[in-house]
Length: 441
Ligand code: GUN
Ligand code: ZN
Image 1: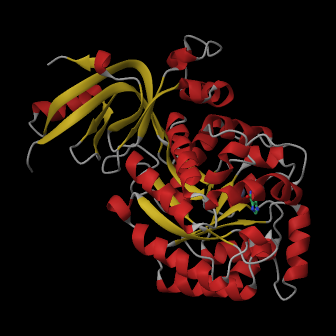
Image 2: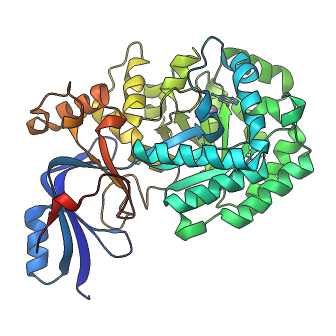
Image 3: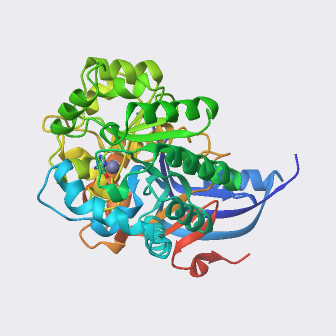
């Protein structure tokens, strides 16, 4: 094989290889090839051996000292148009949507506004260290297109789509079913698979109450014809919503069964929240290998309830964490992990498990684990540099401690301030220049 030319980052590397296994190299090296993929991740010594054996050649290297190199975060559920509506307190889900969310989403009819919010949104995601995200936009085709255009400039990995609604919403957000499908298909044809699969399309029925059975069935037909395309929606978030779905769809065995009957479930389907589930819901999820997005910060904020974390683990359901901006007040996945711990009344979730759910577990939920979520060779070099000194209440000697203690400090004390830089495909997309870490050759 030809000698690979690589760019190398030296630092303290941590990533999750699976639910239980963490990988750590205190004196680590991450080698990135010219296509932006990880060529090498391991100890500095082992990389030196490869260089000596002539297997690779280091063109440029950056010594980050004790700083951490972690995989970029995966946010499995959030709403771009709600970024300006975080922190609107005081109502449960259905009242909150009516009062704060629908009026804001109506503004995305204006493409310029949509573009401006999209720029702000993606810049903030990268600042927070999120390199992969599963995103709702609004019903407006042009607003969704603007979001894709901005995303494509940043290089972020995103699954996105326009929202679909034809009932139980204000008239100004209700669509004709034909248009809903036509516009979704046009966006899918334009963006699905764009830039070497960095951008992917999802059909997004907002939630069962906002779509007629006929429209859900039409989405099901599209998914059958386009099996690589995603389906992203909400399920069983609040008790009132579940009761409403029973009234609207009396023929269904459960909330999730509404989606199953329409052919919306499968390995490319992501259901956000999934709190108030019964055995029929679990069966539909497991039978179809659908994935869930657990959004603890949002569930706290709207007082929706607590996700059955241990049950989902036991049933081996694929699930990741989601910020659910704007019901979730912050994008930082450090804070979402922390809320994931706090929201469980009786469960002590280990830091390693939360870290897994915010990275590789999320990538598995989105079926993107072949290319992201950890720092194994062959994956895209999507990573962040974390500097714990940027937050004064993190103990100065934390990086010398055992890995569990390091992760615990990151989860309970971390936020966007400790993310020093963010890289996608080996390219810095947020943060200070690494020029002062450049090792002269
Ligand atoms: N269910 C239907 N729409 C929404 C939304 O915008 N946010 C949340 N959290 N739940 C929903
Ligand atoms: Zn949501």
